[in-house]
Amino acid sequence: MGKTVYPCLKCRLCAAVCPTGAVQKDGSFDFLAFAIHSYRDWSGGLDWVEALLASKDLEAYRVRFHDRETMSLWQGMMFGCNHKCGYCQAVCPVGDVGMTRYLADKKGYVQEVVKPLKKRAEPVHVVAGSQAETRVKGNPYKEIRHTEVTRSVR
Image 1 (cartoon, rainbow, N blue to C red):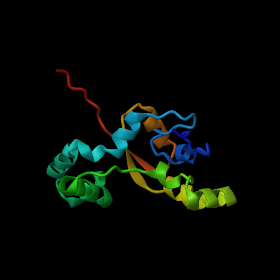
Image 2: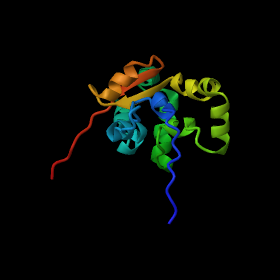
Image 3: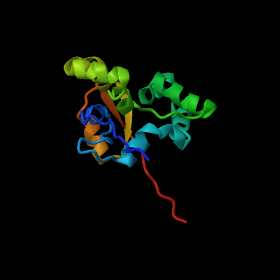
Image 4: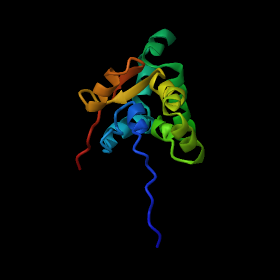
């Protein structure tokens, strides 16, 4: 058997761009923060249906849900859900093309690849009072969307 090679460069770009802080600089991973934001649509969009029914008109609805978010929820119901984020994968320079670009010009790579994702205006789903909420509060381009976590007892 060959030796397993772990290709991480330890550049921590994944931690820098993670909107919820699920990927952390020390290498740890907050699965709950990741799952709540990334797979939010898998909850069935019940809060979305409730908002549709409770909104008195389209303007009131759009205060709560942006068009892009509506399309994501609709797509999830019709065709199956996708996760909302993949920023860690998008910025990772490991690979033939990314590694060459990153090693040749790290600052340029950050400006071209990382900064646009950090500055992307979007709602980020978090639990109130969590570390993920604190992370989102630190980015003026992100909008906090609170999600409740409930546990069923059998």
